[in-house]
Amino acid sequence: MEGMLSQILEELRAIKVSQVEACKETNKHFNQLNANLIHLSTQVSQAEQRISDLEDAKKQQKSATSQIQSELEEQQFKLNELENRSQCLNLRFIGVPQEMEASSSVTKVISDLIYKCILLDKAVAEDDPSIMWAHRVLPMHAANSKYPRTILVNFGDYRIKEQILS
Image (tube, rainbow, N blue to C red; front, side, top):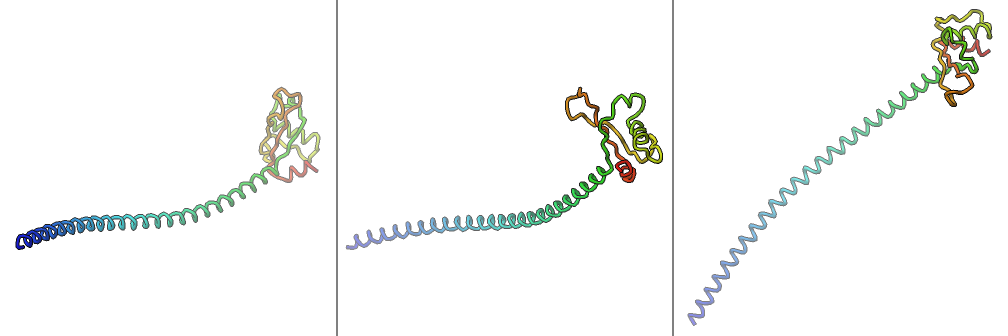
């Protein structure tokens, strides 16, 4: 019986040793899992911080974009207003033969035309500041059209334009 007891005792010792090794192995795996968990927790915290920073930057960009959009709309309105005012000073002269400007400039032709046909109080001289510019526009149809190109004239003063129209 003593042999049996010593054999049982040996088996119990072997089981104890294997259990101790299994516990050590389990502790080792738990320590690795704990380290991985700490590492993942750190990464999640860093990701949350980056997301928070990106959300803050997005809010700032949205605010800046909104401000730029409103400034753009204001500038577009001002530009349209200036274009409309500038175009209010323009007149188109249609049907003026192109041969008339063979010896003089378009501005001089228009000045003479205004004086002869409309009979303003004074002739508008070629260098008169009331005519800012005058030029022929591109033809609407083929380049070899039988109709003369339209002359576009910009007056520096709307009163001259109104006087011509009335």
